[in-house]
Image (cartoon, rainbow, N blue to C red; front, side, top):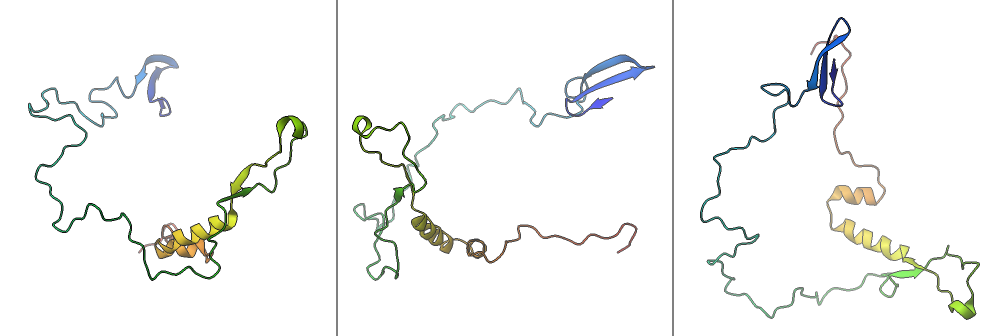
Length: 162
């Protein structure tokens, strides 16, 4: 009997167990060979460096490199689109939040509902993200149907020949 779930086996003769064990350990060569075989003669070279990063002494910056240049260069010709949510707060008070019954304004102070992300701003950010991604993501985000991730092949009826 083979038990794949536990990788074990058992040999029975006339209903009595004669031998049982592990499929992984009891066979030579192993039933399932190891994915990596250790080489006992494998050693690190004498000049091996354990550092995670090794600096390149020959590396140089381009001749026109400017250390004082900004990380991003603003586009002077860029304009804000109509209806852009420039002044929209990133979070808003949760409209579904309710003041707890045991809240006492005198003792606990004014109750302030928890904040949640602004949905309108989140939609705007998603549109920006989708505009910068491949067209399949844009179709999916725009709701123009699903995008196939794999092709389906029609199946042949059994017994037919090509």
